[in-house]
Image (tube, rainbow, N blue to C red; front, side):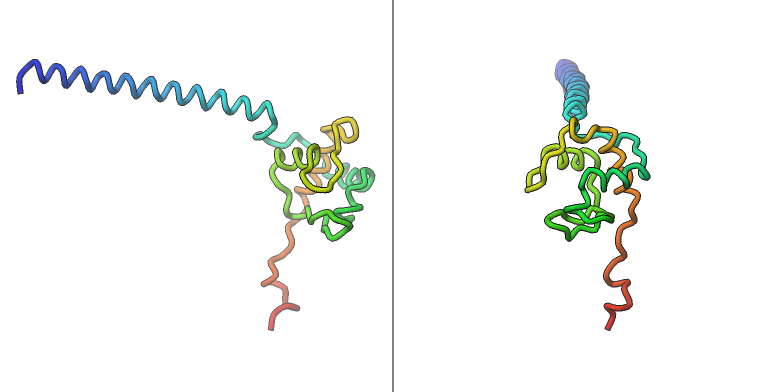
Length: 140
């Protein structure tokens, strides 16, 4: 291999390393922008701090029990079980604020964010039901 070919090869490798470095920087920048946009829309993030005791009372006061049952067990008029099956905060908040089914939307004016966080804290504190296979009544 000639000296000229070796130099071209070295330059090509250096150029590729430079391109990879810029690609990594642009990818990190795009990820940061996307993350900030999702956070701003409430699509990712953690739940605000809530008071489970207050949430239990609000669940009744705001009428949630009418569809979801007094213990969030479901089986009321139309609401599904929430106890032990609460989705992540962004999905929960979105389902309450902009439901896709028959549920009435609870706007911030009707149910402030702090109250929604309290209800969420109570629902998260409810233990999931035991697996069906662990119930002696259902064993042969």
